Image (cartoon, rainbow, N blue to C red):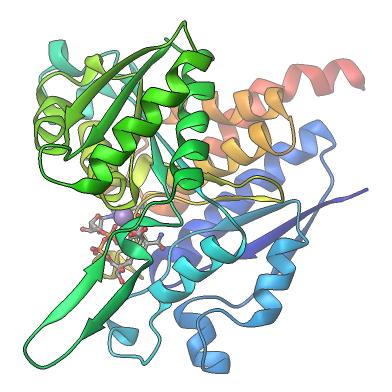
Length: 358
Ligand code: NAD
Ligand code: IPM
Ligand code: MN
């Protein structure tokens, strides 16, 4: 059966990087006979403009029935005062699809290290993932209100919510360097102390995994000063949001980093970690690599297309090595030129196969 990919093309730079990503997908798919249907659905600001609501029910249904969902980024000043903002739609689709685990990798490869703002010796070889809880915590807790003289948000974590995200992190660590760092504020917060208790209960199931605990403030420092300490960072919704932008910055640009959101069952959602970058929209300077890397993750983790993902990853590395990069990384190529170069590199890698086949 043809693979069904729901496409949520997003706002501001969203459509620009989605177009780039889909061109790369099409180029790679031709070499690997990968069949797919793209099902475009309205979402975010675009959907507010079309139907007055950031997450139409039809979009939720299409997403749930897909094999994978691709999202670029939503939101922006145009809708900041909307009764229901695009961001509310994003939280709602994550919740309705049950996507409780958000995986955000940070890797400083040999091609990238020269673009990092951090000294080479400190940053080179950095390779960790942030496992961010995505459907609970302060983003969703009740009560939550704003009045004239006060406002309240609530952090709630239930046992099963912490158990399942902890298992995601431990499972991931087993496939990596077997080291989990739990990041929290257990010197102050009850929810953090609770996380430590639950993680302590799960840990015996994974005797090969080393666990350490680090306060979030110290983690912010260590991501910059000792990034190689980390293998798997396990943390809550809000800390994971903040630390993942910081972690992205040490790779050279936020515009590089993909993510994968996973639930108990059903399709995964793949999206860059950054936002819709209204400050650079329409200028043809958005870095498409975060989106292309998200597509590579989708091919690997939803469709088991490991070779195809490898070819795309190598093309991205080659393009960075060739300095065919956008302004955020210090280059002066456009989104389109960078994308073309990546596609050329894909075609070059796969050309011998074609010659042989013919
Ligand atoms: P942002 O991530 O959009 O941008 C932060 C900075 O990084 C900007 O200077 C931007 O130009 C730059 N940047 C981001 N992606 C880039 C790329 N691919 N190439 C080059 N530069 C890039 O964060 P923001 O400005 O705080 O938020 C803008 C809007 O996006 C807000 O409405 C916010 O709520 C929304 N947002 C959406 C998502 C999402 O859809 N998942 C994530 C974060 C923020
Ligand atoms: C992200 C974004 C979202 C989040 C916003 C837009 C709701 O910052 O995906 O990192 O906080 O989860
Ligand atoms: Mn964020």
